[in-house]
Length: 181
Image (cartoon, rainbow, N blue to C red; front, side, top):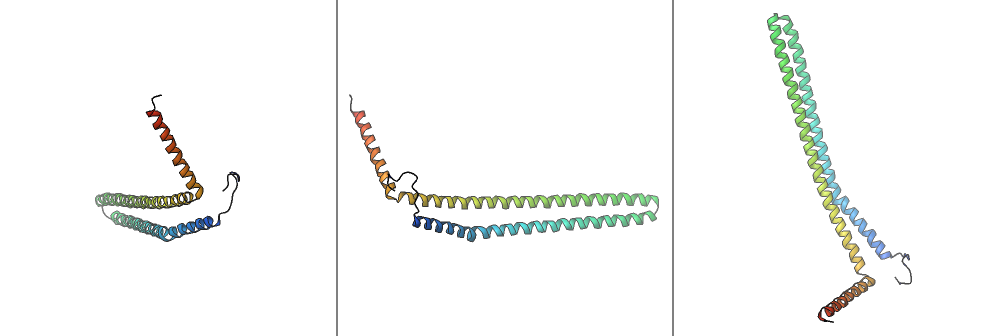
């Protein structure tokens, strides 16, 4: 670029454009080849785990329903017996239902907590993996941009000029320090 062209002179540098387009395609290919499959696998594992936990919850609810049916049958049989046996049967049935409900509620809560822990772990792993992949991609892109910028003749010339200006400034500073006047 010529200094007379001005700051807004925009030109298409086709080799750079094509190389950047190729770089973008490589990044997309890498993401779809190495990032997406593990991500999909992790998602499938999480879905499978949640599905299993839902089945366990359904089983616990079925057990509770069976316990409630057993309670109803025990109550019907207890009505036929004497009032003392009736009262004892009711107390036993109430204790069984309460215990089964507490057990089922504890099991449901345990399964829910376990699922949430697993989901949080998968989430953390995915975040770490994505952060690592993003860091690698950003570093690669920054390296490519820096390399493209530093390979141009104007950048080399400016770098040499800055280096010579710094050497001149240091020489003057050294002369001022040594010169007592």
